[in-house]
Image 1 (tube, rainbow, N blue to C red):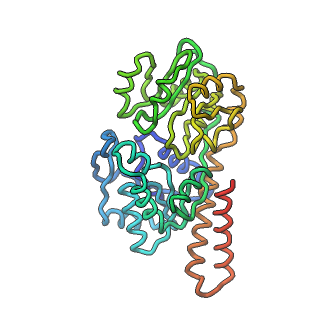
Image 2: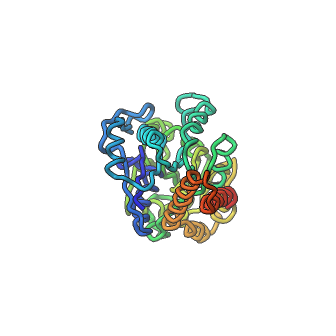
Image 3: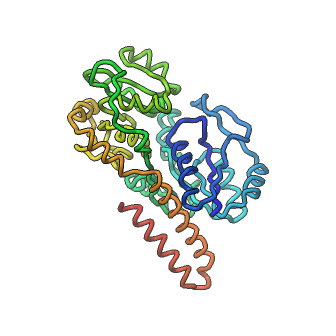
Amino acid sequence: MRLLIATDAWRPQVNGVVTTLSRMGEELPRLGVDVSFLTPETFRHVRCPGYREIELAIPSRGQIKQRIETEDPDWIHIATEGPIGWAVRRHCLKTKRDFTTSYHTKFPEYASKIFGLPANWMYHVERYFHKPSSGVMVATVSLADELRKCGLKRLVKWSRGVDADRFRPNKVVRLGREPVFLYVGRLSVEKNIDAFLSAALPGRKVVVGDGPYRGKLEQRYRDVYFAGAKFGDELVDYYASADVFVFPSRTETFGVVLLEAMASGLPVAAYPVTGPLDIVEHGRSGVLGEDLAKAAIAALKLDPRHARERAEQFTWAHSASQFLHNIRIAKARSAARRQRSTGTRAAKSADGAFIALDTQGRKT
């Protein structure tokens, strides 16, 4: 299969979308897929409103057409709802190409937090964007339930993974007095980081990451250690040096950093919301609760081995296999739709397979 993945999020951005797609680029060829990416790199850019450090690509219709015709893929997956995603969607509809999409980011909630726009307005846009998709891939069951209530259809599960060989328990004392409560991620207002930094906790709070909200946070919380963005072995050491990973966000679709922390032997403290609900085993690999400080202190008492064991259940190899399976079923369903008028057995079989997949996405 020749697969083209279109995405507005790409390196040098550091986020869960880029991490996930980069790992698909490594894992899918092992499953016999010739994968290529249509990314912002070759287009002119403008600054993203509210995130000036992020540049949005502005592709022309001719550029999108030329790239797709040159690649001549067997299937197209649209990963993001940005300018590239919309342009590729437009081309697919015009040329009657079937495609899948994925829902990585809660843009309605982000728009509400950052710009004060009603979330239901943005959900109308999300429904419109994903409606023609042959399958909308979502990371967790709880997210699928939320989106189904908002009117999105053909939802299928696509989980995430972690490199458990790289992120692993290896206690490194580099962050001072214990206990150490750690946050890793983007420093922006929608991440709700104030809920962590204002919590009454013993020991030390450490923040790893960068973003538009960093300056205000540093001024407001002078007793917190802001390490900045870290990568590679240095990031691994920060995870290994902490005792509890605190995840204050209420607007995540998954949270790859949760797996990285647990693989490093860190129990998680988080709110009982989408992402943590699906990943963290309450009372075993972490503590979920509306009182974040209470949850973090309780997480200190958990056995780090249980966090590690939970993380080991998520692999990038399985994520890629699940992603490819979703595409194969969606592709078969698209072919079945075209054959339905003939009433062939193949068409009925393919439709049944997709229905089974959708059911699995709701229940597993």
